[in-house]
Amino acid sequence: MTRSGSPYAWLHRSRDLASLTPELPPLPLPPAQSLRQRRTPELAIGLAGDDLLLADRGLFFLYPGFAQGNDEPRLLFDVPQARRSIENPPAVFTTPDQRVCLLSRGQFFEWREARIQPLPFPVGKDLPADPAQPTSAAPGTIVWLERETLCEGRLDSGEIRSHSLDGLAEGPYLKLQALDGGWLLLAPWLEPHRSRDLAQLWHLESGRALRIRYGELDLEGGLQHWAELPDGRIVVGDHARHVDLGRFESLRQRLLRRRLAPA
Image (cartoon, rainbow, N blue to C red; front, side, top):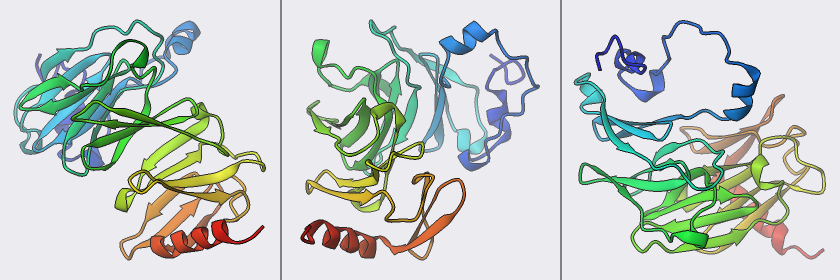
């Protein structure tokens, strides 16, 4: 596979993930039936040291020395087809202790000792059904969504714990984002119903969960964006406006006081 002939040749023209922009000619849209069959993108990339890992349609590729612009992509692994319906896209992500994990066709893997290795999660009826939005907020642990459930997987033992999500929108409409300090943000993609929470903050290690009620942040369109500024302040927003929440610890204390306040 040459650079000019590779479907990922545009990767070689960008030296960091922040500037990766496909430089491909526009193509006509596939037939409507094909669009229905591919409702989500099937490509994910992530750095592993100086190398780049790419997941696409059940295949894992490695770009050795990508940071230096070296070498051609090398096929690492072909993930077996799942025996169940899989709709969620692949992912490549890193834990706080720098373990590189991958998801493809509903199966989790780890890039370890220069090889793709399956993670030791249970098989059969206990296998994750269709994991969505995997990420990590604590060393040696990954988290993902399955319908109305937040799942927590231990990389070394293969233990999986499930946490029911109450007060939020249905699972397919939720996003999961890892924050600093082991916290997780769960929020609807779209404007939530007024009877539902605007978002929730979870800290699995301590078992804490803080609810952000609808109307508390003056965001009618829902909490669509969450960003921490260099000075430590948190800014959130919807499609129309942004709100400065101050520092995370101050926000956490405010939410905790509201939870403990008498009704």
